[in-house]
Image 1: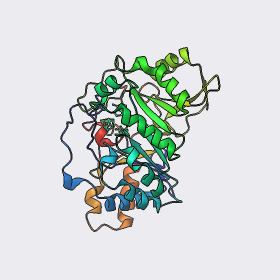
Image 2: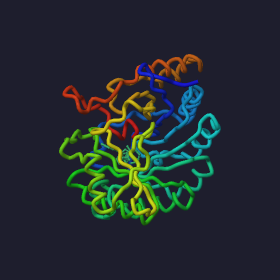
Image 3: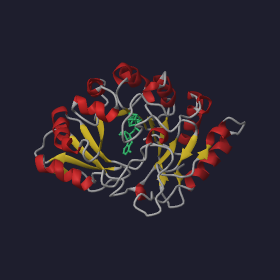
Length: 330
Ligand code: SAM
Ligand code: SF4
């Protein structure tokens, strides 16, 4: 069984946004905490999320990533992971993306519950700048989260940084050194037009090629794989054989839509077939009705079939989605 769209892409990867709320205010995502949050009663319960996930898995989804907003501000995430883990082995992988603030206190429970992987966000290695970027003085907590991920064997630990010109592009070599010293994968992401204040500009975006060249000037890189596969990043190792890896994610300048295997579910129960979708599909109403599993499965199949061929960031007609990354689920 496999979900596929009308362009022949197979969809294996479901991203679940557990909440549109966040304890950070990253300037590239949710700077002012606006737009308005979804009404509480529209947010899916864990039972509803599990039911939708179960049907998705029966249709061929193999990977689930929990994200948000900040997923760990929802209570009892380990219990949801434990439920989702009952969908293994058809479900091959359960992952989490978090800003790390609350990760250390949950790491052990998440591991025991069946979480396979974690991706942490870290946009600066300098305390004052970390606060400037995220609105919270919490570099120590983000670093503790990386240690906790290693301690609980979520390896290889992946750490994401969104690189923005004039904000943290001067730290690329420092991040690469950090990856080498800590034997982790540092992944650098191009700034995308998904910030809630709609302040994205092309000039502020540092392209993947520029990031790679800036790192290589200090630490020469060797391409690890000649293909991206269904992943989104170009992977590099250090040419001198040092531990650690670099990933470059360039959705704007080097888009990977042709290989995209993802579908998203927002915290308020809307299926989104692309980060940049302008149309959402309301599965919440369906599961709150007396629809059968077969009807829900048919609805999912028809949504996925309509997946957009690609984003339009580089087209003149591009319209930034009204919902920010924090809402859609990164
Ligand atoms: N709160 C969690 C975190 O920050 O890791 C999970 C949700 S966050 C929306 C997921 C990822 O999206 C993060 O790695 C974040 O850096 C990235 N992100 C958010 N806004 C972005 C933007 N405008 N462009 C590129 N990446 C963005
Ligand atoms: Fe919150 Fe993550 Fe968005 Fe930062 S990137 S504001 S931590 S959801």
